[in-house]
Amino acid sequence: METVDPTRAFVKNVKRVIVKVGTAVVTRADGRLALGRLGALCEQIQELNSQGYEVILVTSGAVGVGRQRLRYRKLLNSSFLDLQKPQNELDGKACAAVGQNGLMALYDSLFSQLDVTSAQLLVTDNDFRDPDFRSQLNDTVNSLLSLKVIPIFNENDAISTRKAPYEDSSGIFWDNDSLAALLALELKADLLVLLSDVEGLYSGPPRNPESKLIHTYIKEKHERVITFGDKSRVGRGGMTAKVKAAMYAAYAGIPVVITSEDAQENVRYLTGAERENDVIECIEVEFIAYSRGGRIIWGFYWS
Image (tube, rainbow, N blue to C red; front, side, top):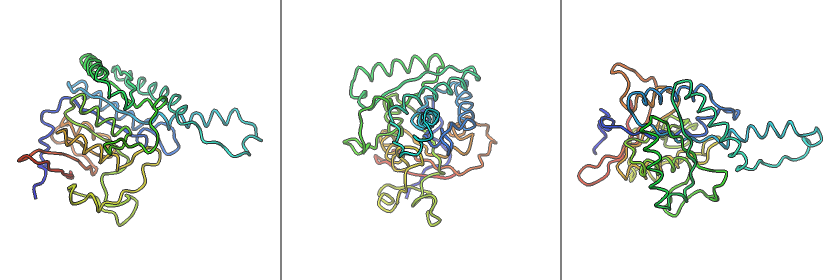
């Protein structure tokens, strides 16, 4: 069985990188923004940007941030009697509209402290059916990147018409992992990085002590023996969505990395931009497709 070369040869010619962060990375357990994680991420992106890399960020978190803010607002506007009644769940689209504003305000503030300009781009899956949209998207993103501006994408959940289950006709689970994979293809990225709140792909739910980290993932071997647990505490998809999105991009020849956000240097490390003697004190899993002899080889390997 052939294995992926651990020399990370796939990063040698990386120029354009798409980094996706999920809601569980963007927010803390209480729903508030994880300022430390976001600050560390923005610093890494700024460093890559200054070294000539073209970095595109795909972020989740607007719904979670908006829900926390609207719950607080609802509490302030409620009487004691109101609070004794059953509470209706907040409208997710209203949460998205409120949260997107706060999320982007934070990104703008963090990047401004690093002398970096960012730009917001909100899209829906239906947008990509329009060839004029795709052409304009490429023109806009290329223009922003030429000015060293960081494009920040999110799905426009406030007006999206997609209903659950969030799966399209091709079987691709639609969330921001899918959006990141779609953007990687459309914008011709050299590398896609999916940041998660777990170390990598397990044989079962990560919290199950019997679950094992999978060192080498082979679709034909592991597809039916892996049991995916629940999705993340706040996101839409979970590891199932990440693996589907990774396969979607990797089949198109784009290397994909699934790794934990716990290691604050992961993004910089994965591009090969770190110093030669840097050491990453974490376990990270990489999902890569190489074309050898006309077939695709899937692999996870550890560093």
